[in-house]
Image (cartoon, rainbow, N blue to C red; front, side):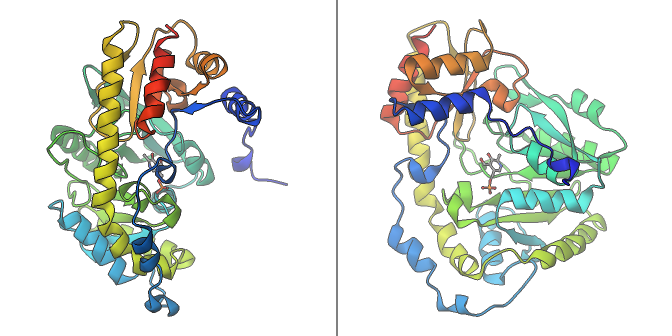
Length: 385
Ligand SMILES: Cc1ncc(COP(=O)(O)O)c(C=O)c1O
């Protein structure tokens, strides 16, 4: 009765089951996987958010496949503040970056065509690809006092069925940005093989260093789809507002835009109140980002202070984003370790395998967790070794 693509193994994994049982039993819990910014104690300007959603202009319906110009102009301004010129004709509003991925996969791929994804990376890709009948092929990121793309392996992973290379800039959970030289090389590889760059920049604004990182939004070396949205930039995942920007050389860019226009026109999935609110919500990002980066820096400093007092665990370099990766003794699988930490210490952390780390010995911690929780949680994790 059902499609093969939805024939998923929906059994709860051991860690999620243990977590559900832990919660149901009402046991004390320190959750160091928290990624929902609306649950982390940040102050939002509630009045201003609600006011933005109360615009009388939203009572009128003006369907537009790209989204309302007022909202796209605000997105273009967001990029111009970073020094990137983006035409609002190249911007498509979507309800989430996940929806933007599905539009891109549908634009580029026939069933069983391939898209390259970084490893380690974010676990959502698996389902997005299954739903769109796309095959994922992994290319490794290598760590040597910092993360970088293994271009040799990336090029080896390309086949005649490859349609795009996904880069997460900065990546989740490794927190590394592509460097200018990597962007140049990626353009060269993709242009030569006529494949697209798909750049996920949801964490672009969350850099730890002083220098801003270059966006792919104005990239011209190869056909490029850049996406981001309010979910991370403004800490407003509940607003369901994101975007997709098409860039690159003609004629492929123009073709991509006209094909996307049909896809977007078919769904017209953006609601009107959020589009009118988008300029005001986007303006609120600076205050949210100030609070969030303050938290991330404080948590990192605390993590480093505690790690300095022992030798078993260490932290990998992080350049941005909301997570830290801890290297721990690989005496058992990461899942076994995460289960033990939950059962014996009441601390919930993500095992590295959740993000496809190629070997055991990695835990991923959220750096946006409230600091007092993080202080206690790290102490408990470290005391296990
Ligand atoms: C790298 C990355 N891309 C996309 C998303 C999803 O964003 P959205 O809420 O816009 O679908 C996430 C969410 O955690 C993410 O980590």
